[in-house]
Image (cartoon, rainbow, N blue to C red; front, side, top):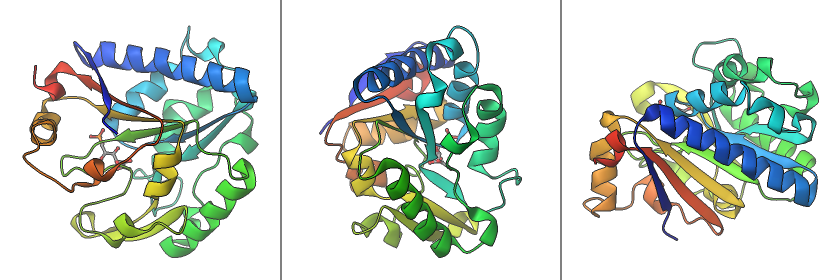
Length: 236
Ligand SMILES: O=C(O)[C@H](O)[C@@H](O)[C@H](O)[C@H](O)COP(=O)(O)O
């Protein structure tokens, strides 16, 4: 399935459009099913969205007690480490919104054993969501075409029998844990955030089919699928 592209003039309007979209997605999930399950992404573009959501008029429009925050991927470092996606999201949003602590599901990275973290996080997902799909999976796009921590040429790309996978990412010399393709593809909605000139080359390569088989190109969302981009990334 091809993504619907939403192209905004600049990074500021991209974040505003994304915040409005997030609010309406959350409200509609809560109205229909009483709960909103969302997987957050790491990276600088999603961070701007989290900061926005923690401010007026967005913060008041969501019934945070009905929101469950998960992480689509995590670096295998303690929650207090600067590389932690949880720490980023906590500082940008979680500490500022009225969400019950038990609705925030971070990856239990303190053991430092990525394989163990992956298994435990899959158990948490099963326990909390009880087989329901994510209402929304937020993703950033790396310049190498990675999404979540599904990096090119890693075995995690081929994991289809579990909800999560662990992997070693050579270029960052780091262990990561990621949700797998079946989880992302089954979501009710998937959004990839792409901002800035540094992403123009990869976006152009993908949209002109100059490359193939990159992690983002292997996505096959079964439901709503969007790319939110600014003009700098879209090359316009
Ligand atoms: O933890 C991570 O590294 C991410 O989840 C990753 O997939 C990120 O979203 C992209 O690398 C884009 O990051 P930027 O928005 O910072 O370019």
